[in-house]
Length: 533
Image 1 (cartoon, rainbow, N blue to C red):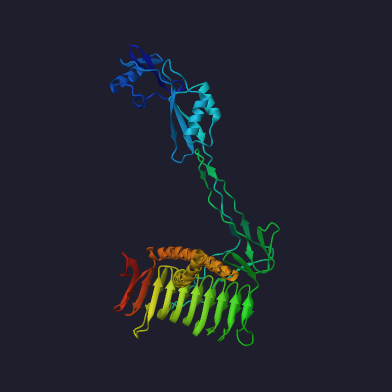
Image 2 (cartoon, rainbow, N blue to C red; image 1 turned 90 degrees about the horizontal axis):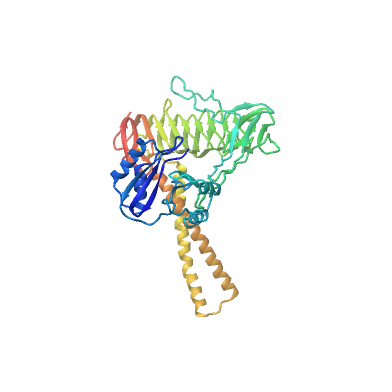
């Protein structure tokens, strides 16, 4: 199979063009290709002459057709070609045009040197090029160079063989209160069960364009299996297996397995509790005591002026009386009957019947929609949504609700603002001393070894502080962008929201002027707007 093509003839009587039919199903030559070639060689022609020639060739039984283009005499034409690169620079094709009837052909060396001159450095298909020069196929795209495609790798991942998405969203009683006594808080496993398997990363292979430009494969992430007690890891470090019958959970990709520590009460008789797995307190956690668990903490009674820290979830069936010093910190979710005068932080969601004069922060949602369902006083922050029945107080208690960004982002921004100011101040304070020493050295004054060492240390510290300052400013700008981004975060009130309540969404806020009912607050066109439910 070969495409149709054409050849120029240079005669004393004028310039002719000889057109050839395709064979064995090849493509016919087009008027557009012929006229573009003629224009590039400054050969006079008329479009009608070329068109009529193509029609005559098509209608003829002969394999070729001769057309007189003009009566000019031109010099013989050498074999030529057009190079085309794909948009991704991975494929380079050449389309060759024959020499005039008595013209010269190109040589392989000439063509290879041309490629080199045009910057082609990689994937040159010498065999295909030589094949053309041995058996030319004109008006046909010939691949003369191909890049090496990038092969993307895969980041490592962990496959867990237990339920890692335990639904702690509790059922509700008929009166709207939360049923804290029927929660699925743990997953049971047996000794010998496989808990997790690591699928290692597969590194990618860099590619290269035909012009020698490297194409980097995406960086893949490594992972390792992290685990606590009562778990074995295989010799190849790829499989975790349970050593005991117990309850399994995961936090920050670390697997915990415990037969659960059960305690009647946390108080003087027990002291503070610190346990690698899950902790269940059948009674109460008393004032000034602490419970810290790698897994979840469940308290069947009440927590009074105490601190609880859990790697996974915290569940308090009868509520949290913080007494202005109580603190709850969970790596996942928090469920409590009520939260009063406490500082509460969860990376996941928080659900409770009421929040009173507390600082409460959640990485996703906060739901206060039980029988009482009110938030009064303090500050409540969530990344996505705060849903509450009654918000604020007719007694004028200062109540602030924030949504639209991870509360941790806002805290980090405040930390960065302070650190940037302090670092800038430190740099400015060191500059006069350094300048003074440098002036002395430039004037030829002699400095002791201690003085030289001191100024060298100051210069190094200034360099490190400047690099740190640049990194902090970049992080600050990045986090500010997060706050500026419009989100779908909302505050939803299914009852009353009282005047004086402050609603903050991302970087904008409003203070409720009059009591409203059944409404939703959302950021619209750069402002906090109220919508009816």
